[in-house]
Length: 134
Image (cartoon, rainbow, N blue to C red; front, side):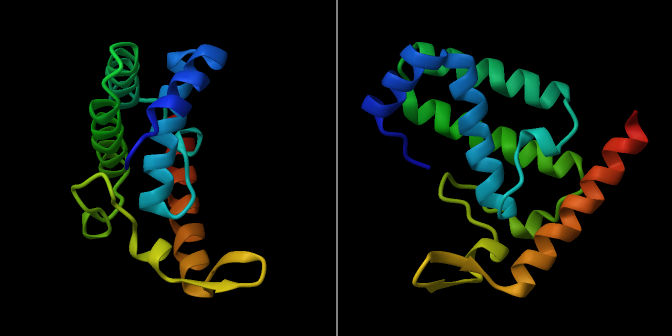
């Protein structure tokens, strides 16, 4: 994932580094899962520690570092929930198999039925795990 420094700085000025850090981690999670975000996963120390590190990198204007940490945090969070590691790639351009299985139409990008079903299945599994931890 490549961050645009000008856009990130403007967003930080408007919303703060912590909120932008959450958004960057959410983007990384969404790219791996095809649409889930941090709100769909349990609030864990993995997320909290990763967010602290992303926020620190953003405050130091280390945008590549922030993107790398967000990617690693997303992968760790999903691994903690049992998300198949074969669907994750260890680079900042990680896109899941489901996200790759899209087709374009006049309205933009549309997921295939298989991709929607896989995403829905994982969303249900993660939701059930979350309920069991309460």
